[in-house]
Length: 314
Image 1 (cartoon, rainbow, N blue to C red):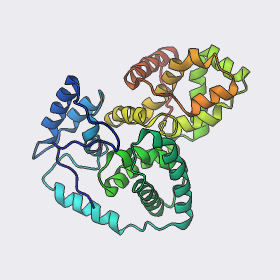
Image 2: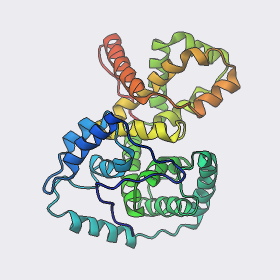
Image 3: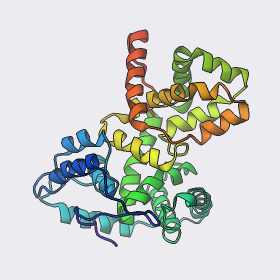
């Protein structure tokens, strides 16, 4: 099992041409290194502050592990805890005939779509998807397998150096998704989301109705899986940098979805039903920083209109 790389090392995806980082990226990396190179304690609050503005790709996996609580801020027992986590993962049963077949099929389709970006290793990635998702399902029999687990797992496959780290991060995130579904079922979340949508963008909402667009088809997926299925992988990475740095990102997520609709409003109103559906299920790459900023504005706008916020959790 591969060990975590030194913090000073860099990595590049297969086929990606190495270029010198821009000055602001180099300065950002220095800020992160100052935190990550501490031998005693990792200041996670500082990592959160920096991560809201993006994480350099070569250390994203390391930072995400701290933001998700996979790695502890106290480094006094770091290697003992890491070894115990690796050994615990090795002991998990990763055999599940029914789930393996479904994961294999979905992962093959996902990787075929992502092939043009040349980000994933086509030889190792399928086995990692299969092992991680089967391990999770075998340890969490109360959670029903979803094909979307492949897309939720993909950012971790791309950013983590070991299969165990992929599993640990995937487990943390899917547990959050599952627990939020217990707090508020998807039908209630979609209904509240549509209420906000209708209030903020009545013309676009009415246009969707005129085109007889099945709102439940896309809205449920947007809300449930943090846009892992719909956004291009680079946009997912940028968005999750912000989410993992935000203590209650599941509460912010619906307003990010509304911000995306507002961002796409003019172009969507020029499309017909099938074209709208295609865009909503395969969103274009976008400036996530601007989308998140708009999301906070929308949340404030809704709070001003309603007097308080009704929780629409991811």
